[in-house]
Image (tube, rainbow, N blue to C red; front, side, top):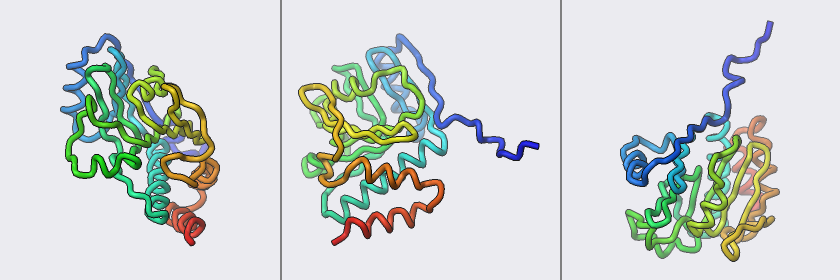
Length: 210
């Protein structure tokens, strides 16, 4: 008899795509929703709604803990804005990352309680977990909205990208968080199903201290 749990076939995320959606409809949906699920991405009339499952959320939250631990130990000021809705009517684009941070612009936005992305900068670092294919080309969307650095994890591997001349190029080490490289993060995330998060983060803190 197969003794695997009944949820072993549950996908890590589910997506719904709607086309010809007016900006006003998207804006209303994003504002009327309770919480940040489903996460919405909007690109010139195309609306994608993604509902993350456990594995998706686990990877995103663990990477977030790594960012927060690293910034604390290294004394780098950040502002965590998680899955904040980043939308710009003039571009007809909007997105909600898994995790996001102000680093370079942290001091600039420190006192702001609300953001207007027609004039305010987007997060300096966006973490995107994409374990199934999106209908929207996210890197093009992020570039159009001038996001300086994007980390993308496909369920197996994290890659880092830096915006240069309106296009992203892959980098080995973060610019926003100098000294934090993709390989180190991948090594930690790969151990997530065999070692508890607290132990992983404590080991990571020890390795970067001093």
